[in-house]
Amino acid sequence: MSMSSGRFDGKTVVVTGGSAGIGLQTARDLHAEGAFVHILGRSADKLASAKESLGGDSRVLVHRCDVSEEALVKKTFEVIEASSGKVYGLVNNAAINPSRNDILHTEYRDWSDTLDVNLTGAFNCSRAAARQMLELGRGSIVNIASVGGINAFRTRTAYNVSKFGLIGLTQSMAIDYAEMNIRVNAVCPGYARTELTAPLFEKMGKEKFEALVSAHAMRRLGRPEEISRAILFLLSEDASFITGVALPVDGGYLLKG
Ligand SMILES: NC(=O)c1ccc[n+]([C@@H]2O[C@H](COP(=O)([O-])OP(=O)(O)OC[C@H]3O[C@@H](n4cnc5c(N)ncnc54)[C@H](OP(=O)(O)O)[C@@H]3O)[C@@H](O)[C@H]2O)c1
Image (cartoon, rainbow, N blue to C red; front, side, top):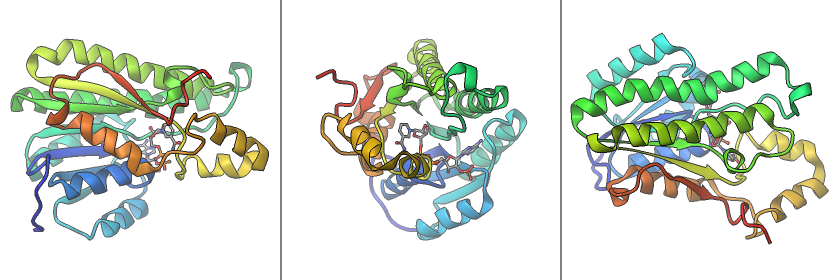
């Protein structure tokens, strides 16, 4: 087992959707700070290459688990507890965005899939984790929402609603569990280049892409490690008196100039 020293030494932390993008970066940073990192994802190939990219270390464990499947999530969290101890940290990061449409052009299936993964997935994992955190006597959850969960993106009905809901889940759990030493916060990223957004950037063409970059007051996109740093801050004891917040990490996207 590799030596390490950091804010998460020996702690069990779960990152959903940790096999790509912002989640993979978060898993990498948590591992570097000493955590036992458990990555949940659907694709076995993506999970295997994520593990490999983290050096195949024994403090990185990957689990094939669709977060929208309640029974599978429950079982996976039992396996996690048995392998590295009760969960201290949970990053609800897994998300999909199959429909970029207004409500009349949103297929019912896309609406329900988006809510199943982005919102119910976080509900399932938070429930499974909260049980262990209560037994442990402490815990920290960070939900990855979006600036679109604070101010709706145009023609993104299902995605926006899932992210508004996630901020609602954040506040609900934060107020219910504050006295039990469990903190629950959200991070709301602006745009960063990942597997989720790359196809969108390709499709929109140069002009629209430049407009999107300029919508960030800092006139650039975010980098996954800039999002991850904020996630680790809120997840860690550095944020020991912070609960129920939704922190924009967006290069000024939400500012109105
Ligand atoms: N990138 C951005 O600009 C941006 C901006 C604002 C907010 N966000 C939010 O940040 C988070 C990460 O985004 P990203 O861009 O890094 O996404 P990404 O590159 O598409 O990665 C998504 C991850 O989630 C996993 N996943 C998807 N559905 C899942 C399911 N049902 N169960 C378990 N895992 C699942 C994927 O693996 P499998 O497909 O193998 O399951 C993958 O590991 C998301 O919550 C997103 O909404 C991103």
